Length: 458
Image (cartoon, rainbow, N blue to C red):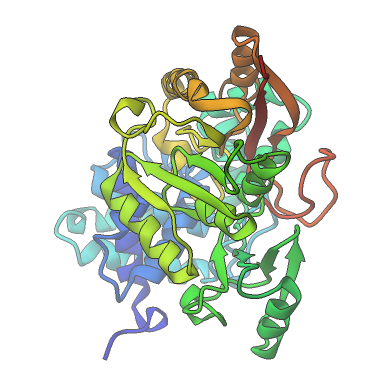
């Protein structure tokens, strides 16, 4: 019988979370590292790993106070995971007072965490000789918690749990809302679904959820946000293709591109290119909303297979090809498109709450490098669009170099490009309140940038 994550000893989960932190520090994504974690402990390890990465700035600041010299990497990772957990717990196991970072934590008593962290150290050859050191650091933290925590308040990286350069960049790009962005980044993102309107309706699906006592609310024209996360495959209508998992901000892409599009003369169907299509969420949404032919292009063959699997479950068909959007000679047939969706590679700075490792993996130089790639892709794809057609440029980024600045530069250099009404920067929202952006979806959504360009007719 498979072990349930709730039956797995905490020390094993702490070891797994330390492994994830080590991987991220070595430049590997947490998603990839999780594949190497035993499936019997993976759910618990993922939860602890997410929490550790959301509180890593604070944990590292505490470790520097507790140890003048850092211990070996394996011990340091385990200690920082434990500190990230214990600094957000009271002795009773209730989350400590909410911090500006906006996160709460898995509930264990502080003394349980210390005991199990030491046990985790003892049971690993790489950390067994550091068990006493880890025990001493954690017990000192419990004795001197208030003073140690107060000392970290002088360091923005500890307060906001982001690298200093990231904090500075967000503050420069969004001086009026930088704190809200960082706070939202550290919140837990809800599970949001997009209803496949070819198979069901929003009202029907909400009733199906209610019949299973699953609390959910509508968001946007065809979105559903669940009050609590649930296994996706266990939700009603999964096998039948009644929904896809997609954040509310990403659900704006297909309607934005389709608005105002018309087929070329002599054709009854729209011809659309989804230039960086994997995993296929936006491709599927286009096919759900319109009678169109979609070329779903992605440079990664394995990710193209995933597009195919997702479309098959939803009962949709697209032309899926492996190819580089920046080099159309290898895949374009020479016929102009009515619409092009360019969800360009970016820093992913808008989806940090779903991928808390991103902030620690990125480097300041990544922004300029990715912005240059985005610019090249825009230049390359623009000639593939027919006069009167529209190109939707989007990134899941809050950095202006990957959004507003990119769009303004493109329009300035292309006199045949007309900037259409567009949402612009959608900043991450972690509460169901009205936002400051009139075109925003109200409530929960990730950070995104959207710009629509129409090619002027000669």
